[in-house]
Length: 314
Image: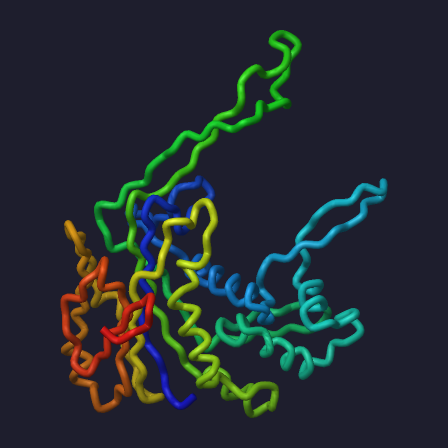
């Protein structure tokens, strides 16, 4: 693929928790600003690829293990075990040919996009991914976390005491969500990251097909990934700026602001002047959004606008 791609992915979270810390609250930096980590965005993409039957290495998978007393436990696979399962290798320790391992790793769609750190069985490999995400900061300043008490249908049998006997009531829990948040993630795709591996003959590099597969998944993976905490999270915006291989653009999220409206929200993109100055080195600009819920305030020169759900040009 003879180009670089710069862009932003926008994720909305309505009464949902896009990325919680260990306290259960949305992740924040020291100033209190809410953000989502790149891992929170990559996971739904990897899950979607896995559900489609693609090879995904860095995703949790489980196996049964029998203990010394014969009891069976359900435990996560190690990286070595996941590799062996995915590539049908009997024992990685007996098959540590680095060229073969590299060829296998590049067959995994998550490695092809995001890279890998693989240090198992005397094989130590680090691959810098062609696709790199930044952190996704919430740009809706009035966002507030909400606590919801939840009543369990069961009592806690571990709370029994000699004085009070068994617990008489079912337990209470808490679900924490944000009333409304809008995260914007910057990303860049640099196919040249795999040039050395192409010279070694272990991969064909980051191809147009790889990019199209990433693009399609990036536009829907948050919407498709429905869990109790993530239901209410949707892909709401995306911009893809395809450029000549040697053009370097700044982080595009610094040019984006979000404004809450009564009927529709407004996304402002103030990068028009910068992109217009560099238009001879820009191949295309594509912007995806939902016209039913969102307006794009700025008309970027040469940009094409698409419905993020239907993919039809707006």
